[in-house]
Length: 231
Image (cartoon, rainbow, N blue to C red; front, side, top):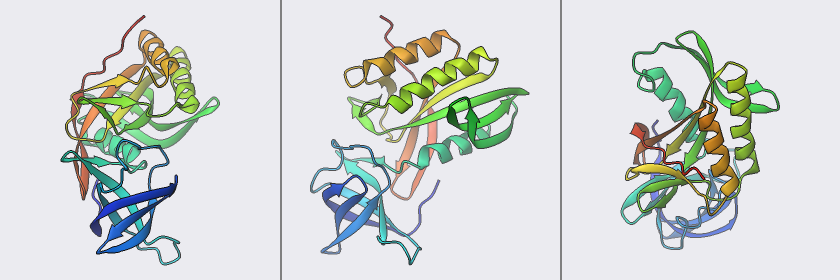
């Protein structure tokens, strides 16, 4: 996945979830933030950031904030990227080597939820929910960075899908290149961690991948371990 018309700036402040003030060429520019999460550990005053100039004259903001640098590591914060990366990964054949992946479709409705991707793996129907991860704790990607009832609901819906005979996948896309593993953020939301353990016991495949991240390009590099702590 590539970005064009990239410029580097300095993060100044975030007046609300949707906007950030960024210094570009000595001037303060109001930019759209492509992520409504808190990102408090990344978006600190003085941080190096990258923005993408948008080719949309009617937009209120000229730029979108897509990446942040912390301790020499580039983090992609574009919340639309994980689904696109997951689809690229499936289409490339690298997700399930030796399997035949067909009929890839986005936004598949099931029950009271809408899953990010539906596809067939060797003729079997499958559903996948994708979560982007930017929280880094000593090389581990953590999710969630803030409580998410919607995310917990998706996990339980995947369990129901599995019981109905679907193959079910939960994919965590870790969007910084130094990640060694993925772990659920138990202190932030223990219920989500418990739901992940239940999902794995029910046959849902809980997976995580590390991305190779540059300001102008991000792609899935490899699978990394998922560490779940059973009570």
